[in-house]
Length: 286
Image (cartoon, rainbow, N blue to C red):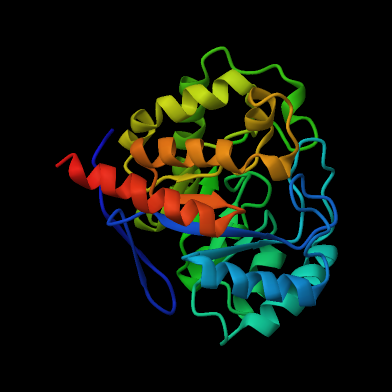
């Protein structure tokens, strides 16, 4: 267990303090094919209802995505992403009280999403897919989440996997920080994500959770997304995604005790309770 360093992110509408307590990022996939909830919130009305439900349940940030990055996914065009997310963003603007993050690898999508009210960029490729994303973040002075991914979603779980996962992730995140710096993004606006399940085998996901404090040495706030992922289902006996809530709860608690500032989850109400208890344990450690 480590004491989290405190950070302050500057959003257009507010400041976001990280480290006083764990922030809950609610996942809203406006897609037909995401691994856990694909199709459930594909139409704008159900997505909008889900957004407000997550806010009521305790989400601190809403992460909206219009392209699945599940293992084996092939991606979609920028126009397809925009057709999916803009009706939702336009209806939430001015009504949702929590900030919105846009989960995209495309600058064109990010720019339109920001115009519709998004205030954080979440890039699973860490500026490798589209370096122009950095211009969007810089121009609008937005925080950006840079995630480690070995390979690409279509092939990432086919291997080969890294022989030393912590070394691989640390090196990849250092490269992401260097890339962001070259592109003019201030380190004070960067959140790092080790990319649980993105190009790692099941054992490596657990190792990253166990060694999360070592990634805190990179000097940025950490976001961890384990929610309902396959390594949990496998470990529990190949249970379906919707039956992985308790397993997810264990990984969320471990993430917080390891120093995570933000946890990205589907089951907001349940994980908000987990976070509150885990934060109390961290606080009691002195």
